[in-house]
Length: 240
Ligand SMILES: CSC[C@@H](O)[C@@H](O)C(=O)COP(=O)(O)O
Ligand SMILES: [Zn+2]
Image (cartoon, rainbow, N blue to C red):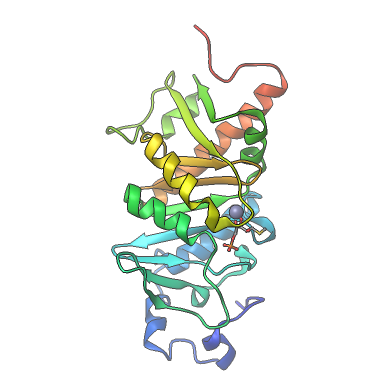
């Protein structure tokens, strides 16, 4: 598949010629570089990463895989991926002509502070809408889908009648300037597996890429539902 942007090896047609390319070129469909491309197409089709916004990063051991910045996320190929060593934050692979995602410091926060295995960022309209309806936190309770969300501070998931709380931070002109407030929210809300960004979107992470995917889907479902409930004047936190 050809992309509308290319890295050095694509330009020269020498894909796989450089040793670093072995970090991203694999026949294994579950390789992080392949998964990032596959999942971004799924997210694009859900309207979560359109117009170059949003993305996903995946960690495999000490290596983190990061998509390029400012590209159509649904058209990426594995050769476009950056690879970073998590501890040193040195790039092990840098595709030429491309810049790493501006979300990288935010993804790093989820890896370092929460030992995440993947972090998803979307510009979901439901996520943006709830940040216009709620002040400091988004809250919802007594909806079956809540049972897909982890408690985080202890083993297991939330119960049906538990309250899901997601902190909301203020947007900044540049993505990387969100880092301090995202880290603050992670500290203040140890039970959160996501942070909403006002008028922007959401960051969701999980222990593995599959958990992050499920949490993102379940949370987005709840955010969309909450917007509809609000429209009808139904409180999202059920009073007994
Ligand atoms: C539509 S531009 C959006 C970006 O500023 C940013 O918010 C974003 O989500 C994606 O950043 P990127 O650097 O392309 O990975
Ligand atoms: Zn964004």
